[in-house]
Amino acid sequence: MHTYTGPTYEMAIKQFDIAADYLNLNQEARERVRVPKRAMIVSVPTRMDDGRVVMFAGFRVQHNLSLGPCKGGLRYSPDVDLGEVAALAMWMSWKCALVGLPYGGAKGGICCDPSTMSRGEVERMTRRFTQEIVPMIGPEIDIMAPDMGTNEQTMAWIMDTYSMQVGHTVPGIVTGKPVTIGGSLGRVEATGRGVFYCVQEALQLLDIPIEGLRIAVQGFGNVGGTCAALFHAAGAKVIAVSDVRSGVVHHDGLDVYELRRHVEKTGVVAGFDQADPISNEELLTLECDVLVPAAIERQITEANAGKLRCRILAEGANGPTTPEADAIINENGIFIIPDVLCNAGGVIVSYFEWVQDLQNYFWTESEVNSRLRDIITRAFQAVYQLHTREHISMRLAALAVGVRKVAEAKTLRGLFP
Ligand code: NAD
Image 1 (cartoon, protein in one colour):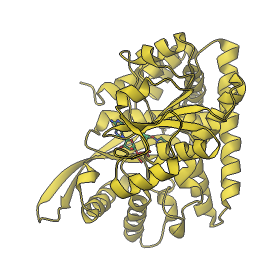
Image 2 (tube, rainbow, N blue to C red):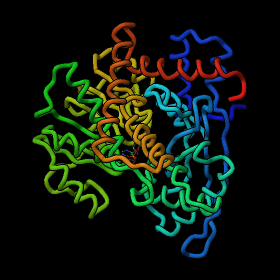
Image 3 (cartoon, rainbow, N blue to C red):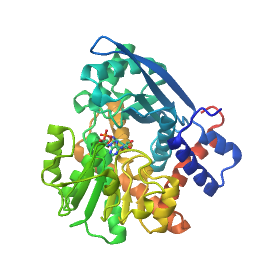
Image 4 (spheres, helix red, strand yellow):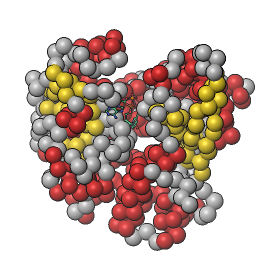
């Protein structure tokens, strides 16, 4: 029987095996690095507004403890399960190691649909989940952050619940919390900003100017919304965006600021009067310069990979491209900025937030952004150099750097972590 299952987990394992083969990892290192170190499944009894008690399933997976505390987001989604969380934890391990952060990878999730729950219901569920996993978290053990369906407010509730438990305020228990209670300036925008910095590096290499660049973005939440706004501000044309329901397209470029106001008011991109409707599937195959999948996993598959008409694929989401699709995209000469590199801005600034909390010394937004740029562009260049030197794909180069570091740490330390 396998503990971790499902298509997203299988995809993460397939990617790992390709990297392990390339690195020639021996059997022992392979087995130790492949499997998550530990996981917790909890039932989260939550009192709903109508008086019923609903049991939500919650998960936390810690993939690797060899490089420092675990770090990773918390996802609220109706589809989340143990296998998906384990895959996301694994990707966090490679990502942290790739960009040189002193963390192992982790991820959490609660199987729920926050869009159908009241604020009070989400708060009670969040606090109870935190209470249930207290033995597994701590500022030196495992630090959570926002992911799909969670935000700054979720992190504030987690921090408060944990602090009540230990009897004093512990800001370092989560990152991505509001600035007023120890959050970092620049954290909300960090992932989208990191995507923007990575694309700028790629544009320079491919000699493509940013003015007039055509961009399509799947997912208009934290990551997709921020990166669309940054491209818009830089003079690029954001020609299409979408959310879980549908999308909008305007070939002369959308007014992203107006669109954000529309989404704030209505909750969806549909109905924006300065654009035409488009489906998620159509958006992915639009002719454009840069395609940014910034929603969920496995959106680009064997079925649609051959129809992509972008020059650069910048993966804002985790795991948007399956290994089968990867091969097709590489063959077609599309430049891929793989997820573990492209969306690493979030965890980089989360690391800054954790450091600021531990020192009680806070940085300016421009310090945060310039240090983010330093780290992510250095990682981009390292991956690009390996890609050109060894004639391997950008994804394999990124995974190889991350997996190698985790394997080395395990070998150096011994069997404990
Ligand atoms: P979010 O909840 O803020 O936004 C998600 C967006 O995707 C929303 O617009 C939603 O409507 C849309 N969406 C959801 N399901 C969809 C579907 N089936 N088809 C099309 N659109 C869909 O989430 P986010 O924080 O922006 O995260 C997006 C992705 O980025 C996830 O893969 C997440 O793991 C990854 N990521 C997030 C961060 C972060 O700091 N928030 C960091 C690294 C990676």
